[in-house]
Length: 305
Image (cartoon, rainbow, N blue to C red; front, top):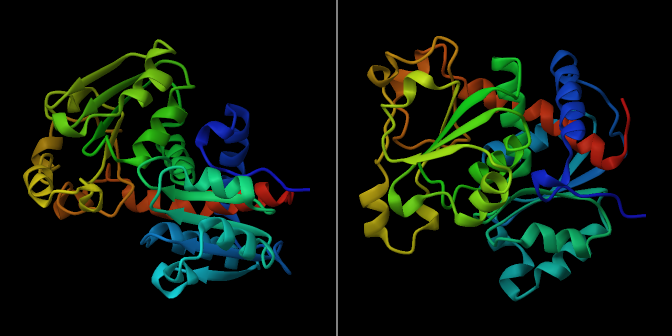
């Protein structure tokens, strides 16, 4: 029988999320467990990745499984015209679980409908990135001790930022969350995300273009890059890419327990000088990805530890 997949963060309840956070904590304390002996996991990356692919592959190796797959779709039969459906159905015959990144919105949902094994969405276009959201939640939980009563600011490319879309959907289920959405006018959070995740639930949010004025009130500052690969017009990208640049000077009035997160990669939006600030949590955030993805893999394979 085909097991569940993880396509959107809304596939999981608050209870599911809490259980995964607790399991990630356990893996952080003891990461080397050979519970995937005999299991083969596929990583199918139709779009470039560094952190997501490597952390998933590290997670599989730490758990004793084996990885097959590709990180460059130009080396696959998709260049010969093979459809996504045929690729997924073929790979399903070889593996126990598929981790897939694709450039098309909705590709992960489609793959989950045709696959005979679980699918983990490792990012589908500008749509969703649920495993990144899980590591973001784990990072917030570790630094703040809670997922409630938080002032959270999302900065940068909120229109195409799949990590932002997923995280807003996830945090909207927790009590007393206040969002500040900061972006150029052209890169505002899509209306459908605001309607479904915020307005329908009566969750307060503010949209602005001014970062510095809100920094003193923040608990979480979630920076994102303006994504060149989502633009059709390079002139627009060049005009918008440096809209927000976080520097040590801009953090002078920030809270002592502020947590600065970033899904990475960064370009210019956080200066290297900020890395020395103890509130810069994005490198710890990267490490958290390994543990939460170990927990996700085992959940989808139905393996208890």
